[in-house]
Image 1 (spheres, rainbow, N blue to C red):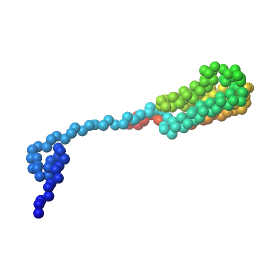
Image 2 (image 1 turned 90 degrees about the horizontal axis):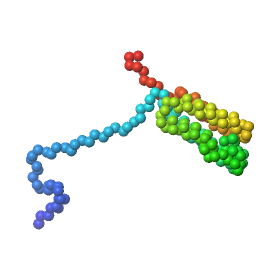
Image 3 (image 1 turned 45 degrees about the horizontal axis):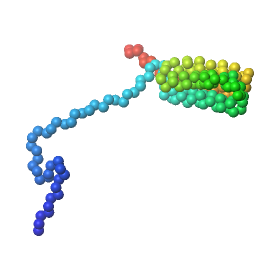
Image 4 (image 1 turned 90 degrees about the vertical axis):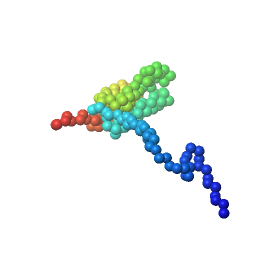
Length: 172
């Protein structure tokens, strides 16, 4: 009976019938050090993650609420002082002015600023002043603005308890 023909090995690999190499082994490939994933270490006074998330949601909601006030005011023709009367709206910069407060707060929160609670309280008080002025123009919109300001003030006061504290000194 004829012997079976061996299957040739792929090019570059040793044949099973070849003699093993008897010299020193080649050096292993160099180990590439992978740098660790960069993490952010917040400084004392910055918000903890749950407080940051709450601030982001509340201040984004305040911006959305102000946008709904603008849209409703333009649709119904009942103008607040910062939007203006129907058909004679103020310049877009004046209409956009109240939106600067929530946007500033979102930037501060995303930037890990330790001043978020204090600036948030000031921004909420400014929105409250906006509501007080609008009280004489359109009471319904003033009530909505006051509610948005109260939400901003509440989250800012509560965030005083959701901040990173300074590490205690060694030996204390």
